[in-house]
Length: 260
Image 1 (spheres, rainbow, N blue to C red):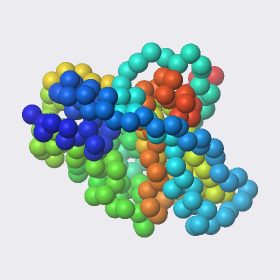
Image 2 (cartoon, rainbow, N blue to C red; image 1 turned 90 degrees about the horizontal axis):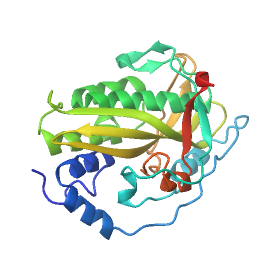
Image 3 (cartoon, one colour; image 1 turned 180 degrees about the vertical axis):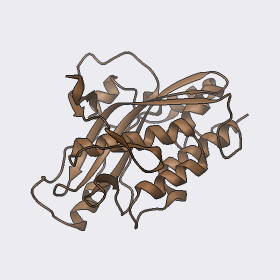
C-alpha cells in the first residue's frame, strides 16, 4: 500500500502508479491542486548562431506551460488539431542498447531523447537507468543518481515492489506521442521535450501523459546526440496527448518522417 498522497507531489511516473492503486485519493488531490495558466514557449536562438553558456542557461531555465495534475489522465481529444513535428526514425543500436542513428538536427535530438526515455521506462530498473545515463550523458551533468529518469524509476519501484527492478507481474509501456523544441544554440545544442504516453500495469491499468525535457548536445566524434552538461531544464507540462491541455501547452503531435 502507498502512503496517502505520497507520490502525488513527487513524479509523473510515480503519480501513474498512485492512480493505479489509490484512484479515489489521487482524484481528490488532483481536484484540490490549483490550475495555472500556460506560459507560451517558442524556440530561442537559431541554427547559425552560437551564443554560449548564458544563452543556454536562459533557454533551459525559461518557464514552460503548467498543467493541472489531472491533465495527465486520458480524456477526450481537443477540438483544435495540434501542429505536428516530423521526427526521424532510429537507424541503428547504440551504447546500452539504445536506438540511435538520428541526424544532427533538433528533430534528431527529439528522437534520441525519446529513445532513451522509452528504454528506461520499459525496464524500470535502477541499475539499467544508471547505465543508460552513464552511456548517454556528457560530463558536467547531475549524475545518474540525480537524473530525473532515475528518480522516476526509484519512485515507481518504491510504490510497487521496494526492489531495484520491477517484478515480472508489473509492466510499463511507453511510446512518444508529442514533442517540443524549446530552444537552440547553434547547430549542436538544443533543449528538447518529449511527451510520452505511458501505461503501467500494477494492480490495474493506469495511463498517463508524461513530459520530459533535456539539454542535448551533438557529439560529432561519436555521431550522436547526448545529454548535455548543466542544470536540468525546467520540466515540461505532463498532459494527455492530443487533449486540449496538450494543445494549449504547445505540444506538437509526433509524426515519424518516413510515415509521410
